Image (cartoon, rainbow, N blue to C red; front, side):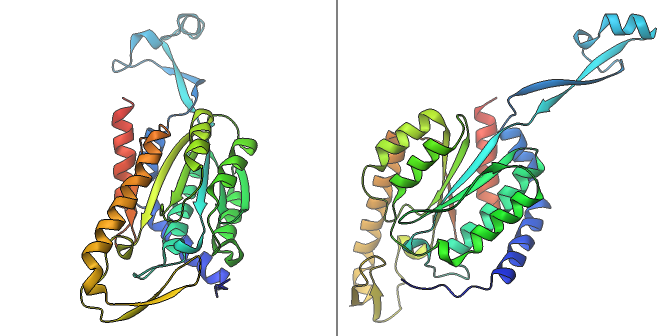
Length: 296
């Protein structure tokens, strides 16, 4: 197994920088409006104004106070959100500044912070050949720091992919109606994962975020001869990318479509697509806005 050489403290600092950049956008507002709380609760009374809905006037309280009072309510934010993150071999790959797992870690860290700021609980689990770093959703700064620690822990990465076990653990450990963001590149997912996702999607709301690198979909046109290695078997091969570029792109597209159809067959329709060559903030916010419009 490849041992990742990672300075955890440096990576946590980088994740914090990414998080602060996201906070400066309208990301948190989009999240809060896209994922409504489970209900509203009474907070207080205030004096009625002409802009208020008269149906909110509390006549008993108004009589006692000698002036018109309206009831104010706040949204009860008691959602639980969980990030199920693919940490297998294929995520420890990249042709850009960040490997796919580094890119995903920054995204999950930023979204976790926004979710906590909105008043919801958040947790994380990283899966490869087994599930590692499984944190049940909680609130608070301590939970955010624990999530960062798991995201930068090199022992959590670089093995074969076993999504079935990961989904089974979620079904056993997480509360019903938890929102699960499945963060994966869709590469190396094998076995009966469609069946397990169907089961999970009945108990939870499963929302995939697909992380792709440009080389997942096409080879460079003028790279010359290169040696490529199978992430799972270690088998190496000398190739000329220019000669197989068209066939590679066609095969990659067919595999991607096949995997997304499996998600659809599991009744998972909503998904976001991000690419390591571009910032994740814009596509994720666009996804939240689509979801917000759909639920109006």
